[in-house]
Image (cartoon, rainbow, N blue to C red; front, side):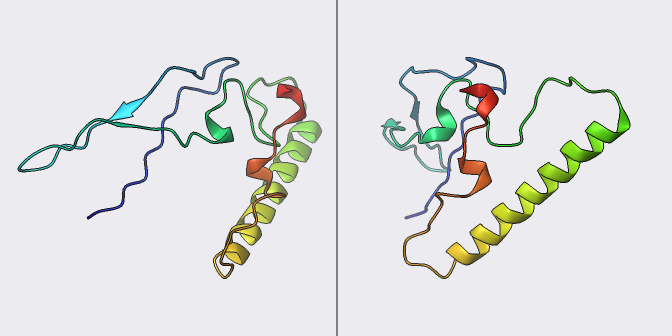
Length: 108
């Protein structure tokens, strides 16, 4: 039996998510699976949710603010990678302070 990871993306715009029921059918060479509901959405599937450091609208055109934002986003990525690496050795991953799991304050 294979294990599949499914990611549903609805966009990065405010209220771009959906609360609709989503199902999946896997189609193989010889047959297809029954229709299975995707019921483990998690925070990533909530409408309008953006992770910390995500700014879809560009409000600054000057070099210095853009540089500071890029540095901040780079540091958040580094922190997230360190947490993900640490979690590989844990029986239960600890994601509480992973920047990619923290909602950006501008989307609250």
